[in-house]
Image 1: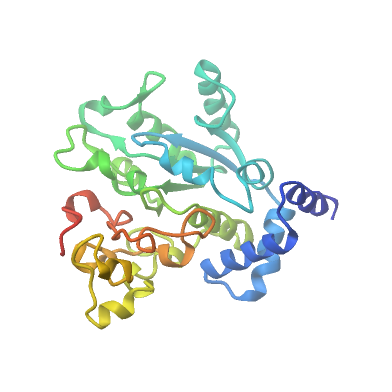
Image 2: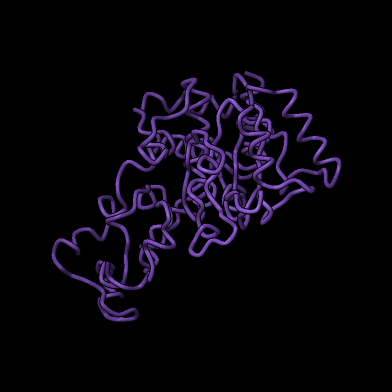
Length: 313
C-alpha cells in the first residue's frame, strides 16, 4: 500500500489526478480488449507492480521516432514506466552511460538476465555484406541481433522498420535491410507503425505483467487487440464512404466538411491499426482526423506497396 500511495502522490505532484489516471487505465483496458472488471487490476500494474521485468532496448536502422513516441506516453509517464514498471537495462537514447561503458552494460545485462529479459528492437537489420551497412561499437546490427535476441524471453519489434524492414528496406534496398525476425530467423511480436502508438507497447507490457503472457497475435505477428481491425472499419468518416461523399482535392469544401479521403489516397481499407480509437498525443487526434489520408504505415512493405500515397488505389 505504501508503494501504491507514493505512486499516486507522484502523479499528483505532476498535476495528474487519480481520476485522470483511472480514465487512462479504462481506455488502456478497452484498447487491450479486456472487460471493465480488469480496470483496477490494470491500475495496480502501474501503482504496485509485482515484478519489474528487465528490458534491453536495441537500436538498429531507424530514426529514433519510436523511442520519441514512447517518451510521450502519459499515465504512465516515461519515468514511471522506466523506473517503476520496467527495469530498462540498456537503451542508447535515454541511458546515462556512453561509449565503452554503455557496451559493457549491454553485455552485463545479457549475461545477468539470460533467458529472462524482454528484448525490444527498434529499427531494421542490414543483412548484405555481412551486415556492413549498419554498426554499433564496431559490431554490425546483424551480429548484435544474433547475439542478443535469441537469449531473450521474448523479442518485441517496435515500429515498422523492426517489424518488417520499413523505409530502410524500400526498393532498391542496397543494404539488404529486413525486420529483425526475418533477418535472424526468429519469431517476434510486432508493433508496427511509423511511429507506432505508444499505448500499443504499454498494452503489450501490461498484458504480460497482468496475465503472465504476451497477447494473441495476427498472421503478421501483431497484437490482435491493436491490429485486429482495419482503419476503414473504425474510421469516423466511414459513413461518408458509404454515401460516396469523397474529398477529391485538398483544401476543397468537401475536405472542410470532413468527407472520406479515399480518392486522395487513403489506405485505411488495407491497413490494420487502432489509430481511430487510440489516437496520438494523449488521444488528441490522428492523421485522418487532421485531414490527411492514412498511408498504411503499419503494413509490411508499405513504402513499396502503398505508394504513390496521394493516388486512389
